[in-house]
Image 1 (cartoon, rainbow, N blue to C red):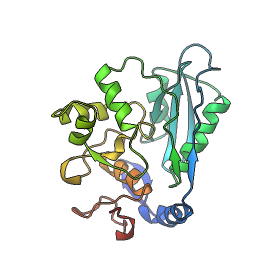
Image 2: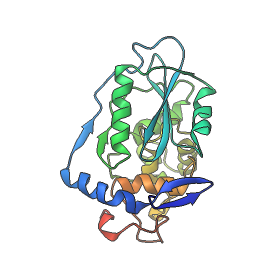
Image 3: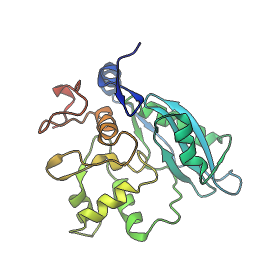
Image 4: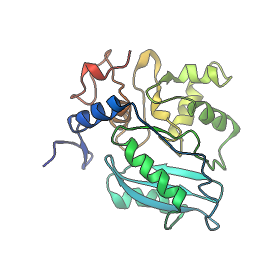
Length: 229
């Protein structure tokens, strides 16, 4: 049986499982690019969702005729993950573009560098301020982090760190809008609204080679050579 740590009745693989995979893939210096694909161009009217397996657990995506609407990180189990998506969309077979995105996400969750900057999004209902914050967040590259305050400054709203934090908490498309790369002041990990909270956030950062030396890591098996300078 693979080594795990238990979190709220759900097993999350330890960092020791990912470390050899991450090291191997990082050494290849490969980037998987998701091209500018109209994810929703062939979609029927309304919103649709699809569940898929990843190294992190069962994830799901929802899309419309305008683009990607939601990326659901794993909940405590598959029914809980699906319930999050089913509330606003209908289970559907994925199009070729959606399948390509799923494959890219599966690569991402084993530590392969992926570029999601060209994925078309449907952010209908998102406020103009949050839309601006999400656009700036998408400019953060693999392994690059910033703080809530610095992100507010880059978005032209200095002093709005708290509002940025609220935008991150309501982010409907994590990873594609990489809110896990936005940290609290003094490079503390900060909060994360997905199931697992800060542990899930640290695991995503660890996949990109980022750890924390100022405080004890939440995933105890992280090693110094994965810390980015």
